[in-house]
Image 1 (cartoon, helix red, strand yellow):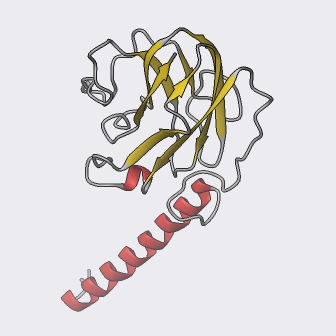
Image 2 (cartoon, rainbow, N blue to C red):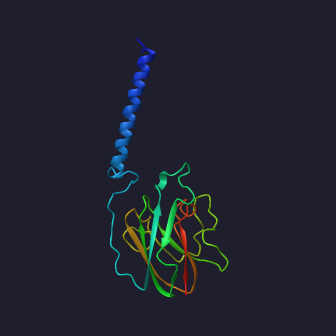
Image 3 (tube, rainbow, N blue to C red):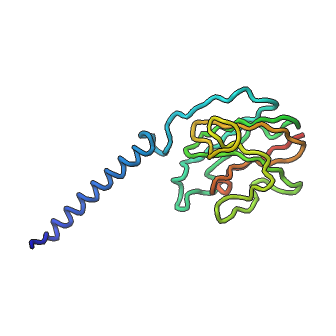
Length: 188
């Protein structure tokens, strides 16, 4: 039985590495639905929300690079949830949540205690905060209410009757709250 020389083994190893890299890249392109770098989702998932009732608050969910950031997946301050207003009148309020990021997001709404500061809830080992007390969530792509997250370039929405008070809006997908996806709303 003839064995390969050291140079031949190195050469075959390099060719195998190149072939595996090329195959891996093709799999990523095939699974992601295209060649849009940084996104594992179709490029155009846009949708139009119906006419929403009451005061409409536009919320934007964004990230800088999505799940590819840092070794643990997220960097503090690398994500943002922002609303076009910080106050609203009590009564029917609708939230139109648009995902301008590269990965799915959601928006939940939870009352804040009088002295509680936005962004200070403890994050569990699962990368999420306790959802007890949540009033609603916009987490469906191109639909109202709960779902598996709003896909990039899409929107989701929720309408509810809000009493006067302070509320925290946040994304509770693993690591997103810690990465900065929260804001506040005061209802008068």
